[in-house]
Length: 125
Image (cartoon, rainbow, N blue to C red):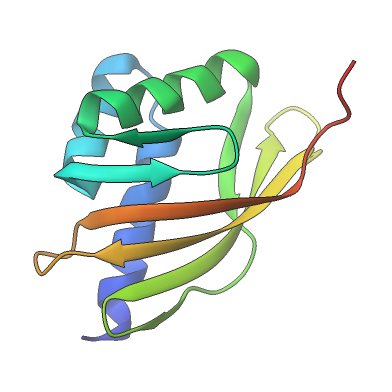
């Protein structure tokens, strides 16, 4: 597997998280994940395109005007890759949420699973 495969998978991952509409999210999730692909972090554990799209929609509702950005290089080997990310305010550049994800890739380069870790979260009210 080439480094490009990992970069491509992660680029599709960010495209899904940053898609501007529900329709765009659904298409981007289908492009990025296998049909039974999963997403797991400390808050959710879901499987399938509709469930992953719903998690992304929830993040958009909770953090309007924010986008997910990589916070460093993608590192991959065999069928896994890891990368850091931040949730950044488009208005002022603040990044109240940051994390680190590990993805497992299918043979076609789409994501089979995401294991997400939250390194920085906003204080709760």
